[in-house]
Length: 112
Length: 112
Image (tube, rainbow over all chains, first blue to last red; front, side):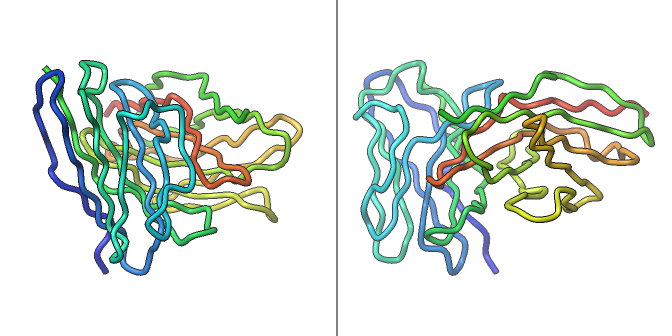
């Protein structure tokens, strides 16, 4: 039973560029949430997708956008990258309405 | 708004000693509470969760946590720590919305 997978594992970009991160949920899960974890901090909620729609959003600017596909996988897009966007980006999956989320290994993004 | 506080940034214990990591939450009702562990460069692994019922919950790897409503606390404990327990530990909560709110984490160091 495959857990949550994310790609790529590491990424280096320069300021102003755009980036796309990918996530495949745990088998049987239909909901994907994205979190940003800055160095030395706890994860911060970005947004959650279910049925291909954004259902909840945290306190992140519109530069952060996402998408969910019919197979429940998801992408996180960040435009106009800033140095402060350097972080570990975590994807979590769950069943819609369930409280327990399972996390992937994360994508470490470095913005130079 | 929900918040989670982990008062201890860094804790060092000797292998074989007992461990208690503190967590306090702020929420109007009884939240759902979680403890996750993160090894260096890795994603988050769920240790245990509390939704309702018995206030002492058992988790994986020999961890347990006790919910105390009167103290708004959900402290994590382990009777005998192993060197492999060295990691970052995050307490998290969620209310009616399913987004997780995390504390800033406690880094556990285990001395041999």
